[in-house]
Image 1: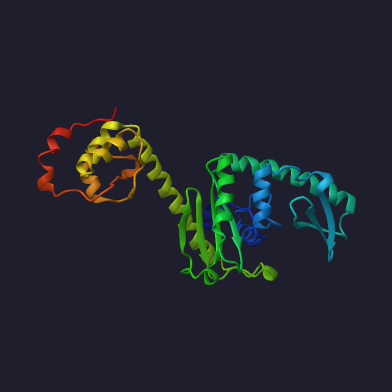
Image 2: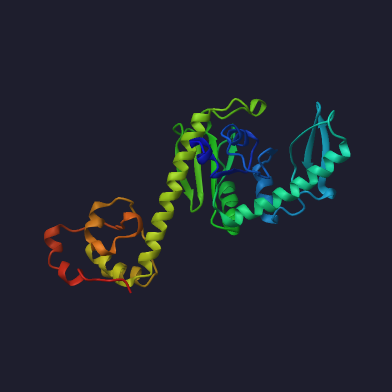
Length: 301
């Protein structure tokens, strides 16, 4: 498996057009996806997620058109349309229609399974428009309702005034990325592959880091003695320490590589992946020495 294939196979396109589907096809990372070759507005995507993709592939809401010499499939309920890759000169209209309906039903089942598993990052890209953060968060919330999936929204860096290839968290399962050279809608094959590589690598790294930090925080919340140990070492007020110990507060900041926090946790209690937790600046080592023996043997409950 090539490096590109391994990278892009961890993502799944949800629209707006077929640009990311072409990226996956060129990298030979193509997996059958319902929305790979369909033009999908963000509102259509949100409505499909809310309804569980109800009616996709059913004859009563599926239409077939002809554009040049290709059959084009359309869903009249969600107002999405896209390629069938079948030519009018090669296959009768009735046969193409039946095949398109069957294919949409199959891909709908696969999409629902992908949403439940949440193993891939769902990509939605939108040209020319500023980020509608509320709408993207609504879509991400709907994805979270199916499973542990994450949404990556890719937008035009210049329109949004963001640095090229910048990727940031915008919600618990929402990443926003900014690409300076998205392919125009009328020329979807004019793709900046290197830009997509950079964004997707960064997104994967951020999701992986977030998962490890989340597991670390959950581990500590389940172990009151470790909560007490860290809060004392980090010089938290007693009320804050008690609230954290009782699970009424969440960490205000969790850092992946905090040497100060690493020094405070006994070696045998290191968190998975070598990650550490720190909520505040610690006191000096001299002031900590008086309390160190008392908690040196702390163990999780």
